[in-house]
Length: 281
Image 1: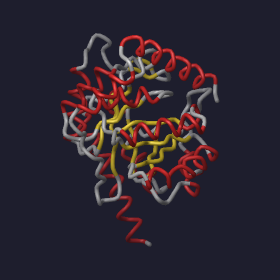
Image 2 (image 1 turned 90 degrees about the vertical axis):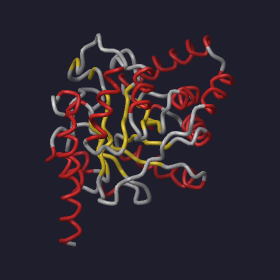
Image 3 (image 1 turned 135 degrees about the vertical axis):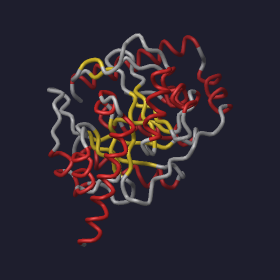
């Protein structure tokens, strides 16, 4: 594990410890299950979709939103993304480096009919319950910070809460582990995606070539997601050509004054690439 991921995992565990002082897990579970069922993730038959992200700050790029804006920002962004055609909304809830909150997640989930995913450095099933209680339909799980036992516990919590799971990989070993747990998720009836994050965890630089380099190792049984460094419609097109069925985009959509237009353009470019590949095959 990189120094960055190790630090984020430790910070995440500390947040869980603090949260448990406020609400017992049994009470949180009851509250989570009382929330109306979230919308299901339903991919478009066009072969390429966008998960658009609410992201207040990027460690590699600085502020992406006015720090004084409250959860209404998340609601506005989510609405703009859905109008652009996004199939799901990702909301960063990590508070220290990304300045996110669970209130952002709740606001986005209330604002749009699309499924909303909690993106964070989740290390404990308690946080999956938090996500469901806030209205989430899915959670991102980073393979590299979870040993097999803890990964199994978080996936079981996601299944219990009827949440979809995005398993995030950085390299071949992560993809192999993801492939090994997919049958269990499928047998439990849990919707799963596998993502490839192209960001280097030491330099924080993006390596776009990683998408193509790992394409042959992608699992064929679930949709796969291109993560980080998707800034333009051309980037979305390249991801689709490399075999990814979705892209997760945050910073580019937060920086633009026209997030609806950019989201729509990325989706159009990705689906056009898929159609062209099918035609030429």
